Image 1 (spheres, rainbow, N blue to C red):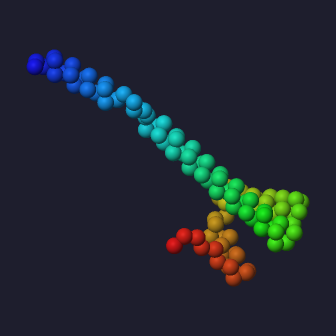
Image 2 (cartoon, rainbow, N blue to C red; image 1 turned 120 degrees about the horizontal axis):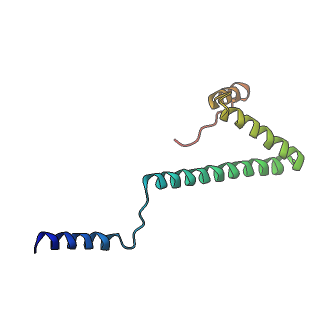
Image 3 (cartoon, helix red, strand yellow; image 1 turned 45 degrees about the horizontal axis):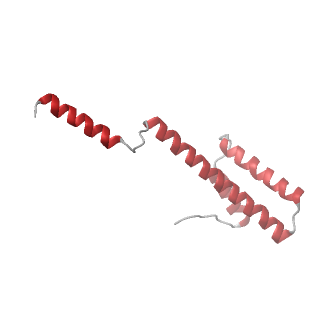
Length: 107
């Protein structure tokens, strides 16, 4: 088998190996990861806010107006974090100092 035939066979093998596979650039993979991460975060926020609102309704009988006021207030608190006006540790310290409640998730 000559050099040209070997190269032709290698090329054919590369083409055959790529069949049925999806080729993506690093940028496309990065964008996909970012989109998945955003979707997961949005779902987590929706879940937490829904549970909080339902707890207010079940425990305290809050109606639509009170629940919306609470959710808006939470959104304002989060907005301050997103805008770098405060850090989460500030809120955690305030909650602990004023109520004695410490929020810990995970280990």
